[in-house]
Length: 479
Ligand SMILES: Cc1cc2nc3c(=O)[nH]c(=O)nc-3n(C[C@H](O)[C@H](O)[C@H](O)COP(=O)(O)OP(=O)(O)OC[C@H]3O[C@@H](n4cnc5c(N)ncnc54)[C@H](O)[C@@H]3O)c2cc1C
Image: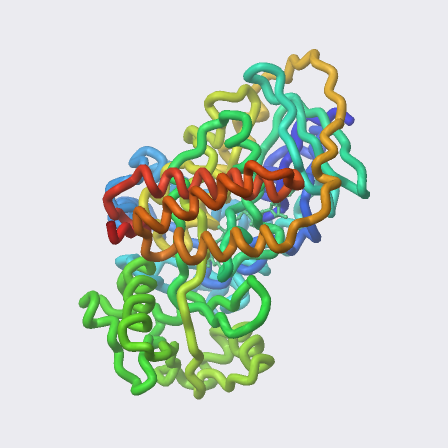
């Protein structure tokens, strides 16, 4: 099998790359699970855009402020300056964002944005609507239930991938490979991510010496319902707080103002730490209260949340919901340039959550990630179309058999607990060293390939967290 382009992942970044590659190119999308099992599908709040040319500067400022000094300013400029164009492109292709009866787009606000500039679709189902739309527009074939287990390289050139499909390892050769495999949710005991998101491609890069950056920068969402039994927890979007939902304790006290004068509108790392600290100090349960909402407005604006929580026994907006922070978003990842290119490997690209473009720095501004996926996917597609073919000559054999080793569920679960307890919202030197020791211990044993890759990714996160001794943005070190 030889393709012009192989794209790993069918979320917003993979699909928007695909629809910007013409039909006459031989493109294959390889996707680990069912197409909808991705973080894009679960996105609720919306997509940020500079509202007009005048807002670009302010959007850049808000993004840089959230990033706490670690953003790549040029990347942020690229993000914001291209935001209106990608939104216009989606609309021109037929996508409908929520609008009023006269067709004016409706914008909402989320924490740390200085104005309303977030577009949404289906009320609180932006990701689902966008994903469905991109799947419909995609003109290229998709290989489903196909897990990428390796990148095939000859020196510093990418030649293709190895994929586990229908119980067989297969090599798929390509002139260009785009990694769009998302974040690292499954490494944590509590997370909001799709079950297919386990950070394996970051592990493959670690193994191959491909640079990863800012791996310690992990965002924890403050308002997550964690009382269900699966590892994937139910998110309560930031837009709820943006529109008036309140974080309260058992007695209705809005303790967030004791931590930050912006209360519910403080950036999510501050809100997450405040909830974590308050619950630990007082032993009280924390809730999200919706008492400021009219029933009819809530039902029309947040229909999916209302439905989902009805199935869990909550009558929203009347009931309050117990919440806790949970892992949500990987800021760091595979280091790329401003066109999604991986600098050290010819014809290899990374886009979306798996990439580190530098736009988020030490903290991501809410709803900038779908936008990042769109903007940098388009740039990668454009560059691919003007780049040369691969000149690999090496013959590859799909020979690794370690994937056949039985799934070690106990080790996977242990890793999740280590990462949650020692590498989450509040980190200490001792906790991180303990985590590293245990991960190294597991890595020295005989392991299946997929667990091995997860562990390599976890090790990159822990090592980066140890190296960054001072707190900044989402990375909070107690010592
Ligand atoms: C609950 C939730 C709500 C969110 N809300 C918002 C929001 O309102 N606004 C916003 O901007 N962002 C939001 N985010 C973040 C945003 O959704 C993600 O950052 C973004 O969708 C990531 O897109 P992606 O294409 O990079 O990855 P994903 O959409 O996660 O797709 C990754 C793809 O890679 C595939 N894959 C993974 N590993 C392999 C492998 N080994 N082999 C083959 N395929 C593989 C997966 O199956 C999947 O198809 C939210 C995230 C979550 C979890």
